[in-house]
Length: 197
Image (tube, rainbow, N blue to C red; front, side, top):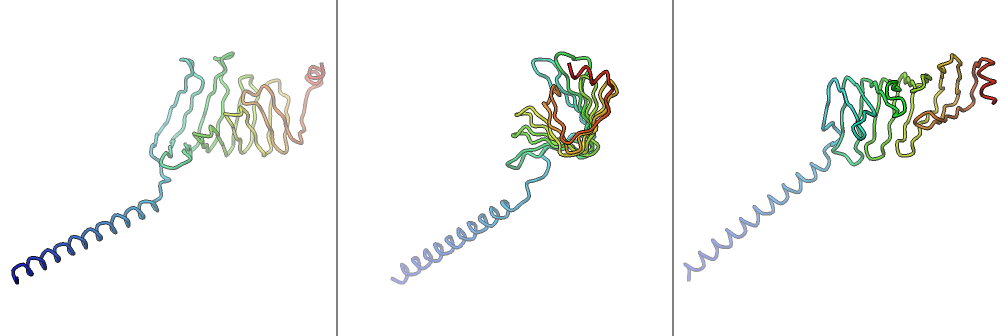
């Protein structure tokens, strides 16, 4: 009887010991899971130095972008790409492929899923037609196909006329139409008469 009692005690001890190990391992796993959930995932998954990116549509170049550094953040819900040290973009119109428009800025950010760009810091835009726009920030919604800003916009038309939108502007992204808010400008009488026709 004593022999069987000793075996049962050893089995009970072994069982209790294995239960204790199980709970220790489980609690460690839970702690690691909680720790991993709290870790910051907002860091770049891709970094491109001296970036030179070409975008094509049906084999035709639609955009070229150059930047000292581009960082892509993919480990978060709202994926975005950022150019902290500035960007220089050329965009091509199918009707005028030899004269690209340009966008230059000290900072740019692109939200991948929303297809939404923002550019900040001495933003300079030159259209395919040769009109030049200067402002401090601009936002481009690719889905709605328009750009806008609330900053003062300085425009120099290719014919030399100037225009100031004191409270921003809205435009189609191909600049075929644009609206300035509280604008003023300097137009030649010839240009004015052409616009009146």
